[in-house]
Image 1 (cartoon, rainbow, N blue to C red):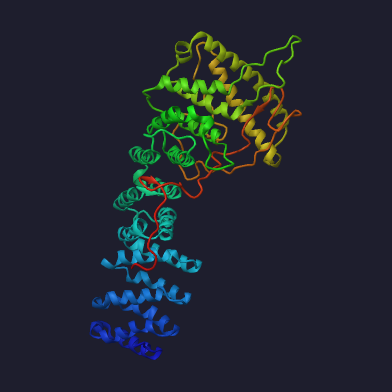
Image 2: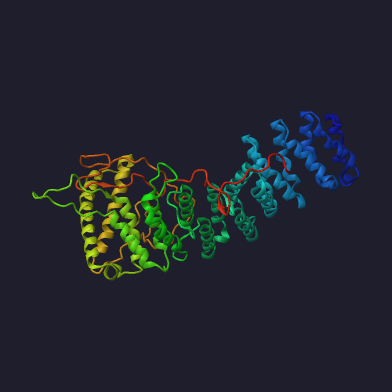
Length: 529
């Protein structure tokens, strides 16, 4: 039988006045529990009164929690919010994991104010008992329905970094690492990114050994033991995302060797047939950028010579021979070869980095005719560079501040960085013997205040690979013959995209279940408290 407002107030008074004899008034507390069966006024009072005396009646603990949960599911949103607000008061001892589990399930609400209330309550009990709260959160992540799992992961990815140090103890971080590894056995792409963000923020994993552990997790997800099917967009998407997650972890002590080797073995040979997971993404340039960024952190390689040859052959594909001259000394072809500046910057940089490990490669591992052909290509490319660099400098001369912020001028600034980088690297290779001493900062990377040495430890952070994308715009200093031509002579091409990696994963990895990324099965619906 439902209690009336008057009965609720009367029994509340009995309990409030009982002080040390509260346990003798079990009947009064039962009346308050019955308040959840009443109307809106009775329910609001019950939502406040039940938690106030909860700890005094352990024998009614289950009934009290269930009564409060009924209020958390009431049709009246104001009653739900009040009940949720009071839930942390039930979070003591063995009840805390259950309350955490309940609050995690309540994250599925579509009401923004209610959702914020759940978040606040979860943060509150996390500070009371982090390990118990994590138990409830991960229980739902592993076994709950999809919407709850998604929001619980997002809660951890955004809120853990706000927790004070005395809450985020070593034991708590170890629990997060252990539980996250379980979750990683079956994740979508979006979940993988968020979970790696969680782990990357743990203090325990900021050491060299910690970073190495994270790289091992990414390697496991990347399927580097399997050959790459270049036409499988899911496989390409997986490799892109895993490589992006690994990039900020690499340093002079945490090596990128396995990823660089995989790219040389499976990506470069299939570069032209790679299928982009997103229509607007230049997949060839994207993977070449990733390879270039990883190359400074490559350790000892078993197949160094083989990998250098692959990079060398791929570089030749983007470095054309000079066009043959006709009888009158003019170009016999209809138009100049197109120079792919962005591609060449990436490949030349990667070749230069690996070349440091085998400085006699161009002298002893390449035959004389092949080397002569390479130098002719380098010389022709360098000539085109000089023309373009002069044109860009003239176009940008005197421009400062706001003038440099226009889309056209931003692209010209990047183009100047690209061409200067290529020019420096080509000069190194023209030395006799070839030199590998120069250092450049890749055109899409921010210049470090200190000497921008390529071999320095990478800065880590969530923003790696997330710079804004700018629409591709044609930049011509001289009149152009077609939409792709940049300048004449010779014509050239570089990416109009400014920033690190404009492509962000969207919605995870499609495909079957199993270890790592996959489509996750449907889960149960309804309350499972």
